[in-house]
Amino acid sequence: MSATLNDITNHPADRLKSALTWLRASSKLSLVICSAAAVSVLIALMFWAKEPDYRLLFSNISDEDGGAIVTQLTQMNIPYRIDNTGGTIMIPEAQVHEVRMKLAQQGLPKGGAVGFELLDQEKFGISQFSEQVNYNRALEGELARTIENLGSIRSARVHLAIPKQSMFVREKKQPTASVTVNLIQGRTIDEGQVIAITHLVSSAVTGLTAENVTIVDQRGALLTQNGVGAGQTSYLKYTSEIESDYQQRIQNILSPLVGASNVRAQVTAQIDFTTAEQTQEQYRPNADTQQMAIRSRQSSRSTQGNSQGSTGVPGALSNLPPTPATAPVTQQLNAAGKQKNSSGKQEIDAANTSDPALSSTYNGRNDETTNFEVDRTLTHTKSSIGRIERLSVAVVINHLSQGKEGKVGPLNENELTRINDLVKEAIGYKADRGDSIKILNSPFNGMAEDIIPPLWKQERFYALLIVIARYLAIAIIAWVLWRKLVLPAWSRHQEVSIRRLEMEKETLHEQQAAKKYASEKDARDRAQQRVDTELNTQQLRDLADQDPRIIALVVRQWMDKEYK
Image (cartoon, rainbow, N blue to C red; front, top):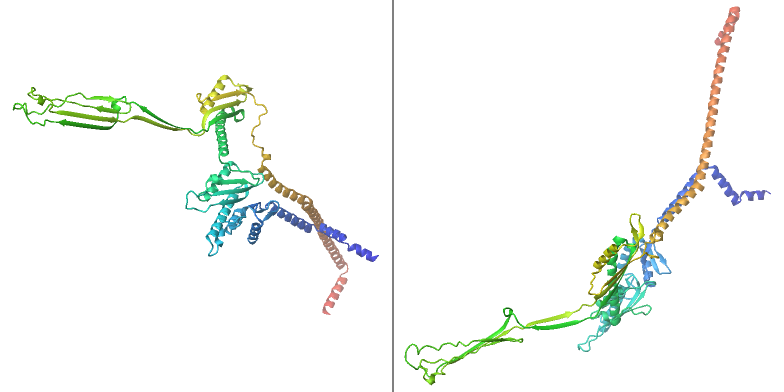
């Protein structure tokens, strides 16, 4: 029976109950323990709430690069997380850029392909062929790394076919390149990015043109298009850009008048992509003699004299030289050039005309040729690609509020005319080009508008909710700890303190009452003693008056005791 009682008293549950009972009895100790526990929980929750957000450091890296990066992060005492599903490494947001620069200084991540670091490992005495092969491999690796930096590309491989240089021009071959890109799931690259990759590769290789670069994605789809296909794609894109530009012009000019949600516009452009060259040569006659330009002028003159010497009657008349010819000079003009021919003949008769020998003594000739510049016009015309042949515009305007009452209704003719004129000015309307504009005023039904999503549907709202939920959880837990742990302990402590104060107050009152009673009793005793003393004194006085011998006898006895 005693063993059973001992087991019951030593049972852990009983001991726990006794400890709890002791803690409840000791209000100060329970309050201190509850307060310490609550503060510890709150501090832990605050550290949890202020835990740094982890951001992406590297993703889609090989196992070798991942192991090297994790080793470096461990040596730098930087916390990290590894996502096994996506193969990503995440570190605190505040250290992302610093860690990337430090890892880049150490050449991490190296990537799947080797770069120009391959040339650092070349040995002495390597052949020229091996050196060229290593250079090609390094160039391919560097190009692949550069392409992988694009956001939509997970990995890339580049193959270069660089022919050997030849001294013969006819045997010269152009280098070619092939690029394979592995896109991230759900991502695509547009035509502009494809063109950028094409020019990036072609610019990195000497003699490589953009037409000789081929890009293929992981599904085997050809991303680069050359020849007719590429031209058609570019033509369609150019046409779409022209139509979008005109459409945006109409939207911008009508939105302040009717509202952005009350107008819709569509533009169809007919573009002429044909290339035409024309050379025209025109000749015109030089009708205006004042504006004629002389190209060349040639003049010749010949004169013959008398071989027989001087004859006739001596004197001044017979010794005079022959008179110059006075024959007229004529000019003729034609389309090919202007030529002026002038000839003159003169026969001089001597003083004695009767002598037949003197009739053909002198013969003179004067020729003049003038060539003029031809009025020639040469015109070379080359039409540009992408010339707008015709524009067709359709505009739909919703019914608007009319009058002071604000009743919704159609627009009047004057307002439609003003809008039509604005649209014409916005698109550069040309009637001779065949442009057409159609404006329709009709109520909108079931209109799908591009409305900004509300705040609760945006991503930043969810991030804000997470932060608020963290601190709200801390507040709820703090309230529960205060309500269920700290407040009861504090209440018990207050009750015990109040009870103790009341007991101390009662004790003080009792002590004060006891002291008061003792003082009153002492006063009564003293008063009674004084009364008794006075009564005894009076009795002695009476006794001395009645029998003085007794008093003398008593005094004598006192004196005898003192002597003894």
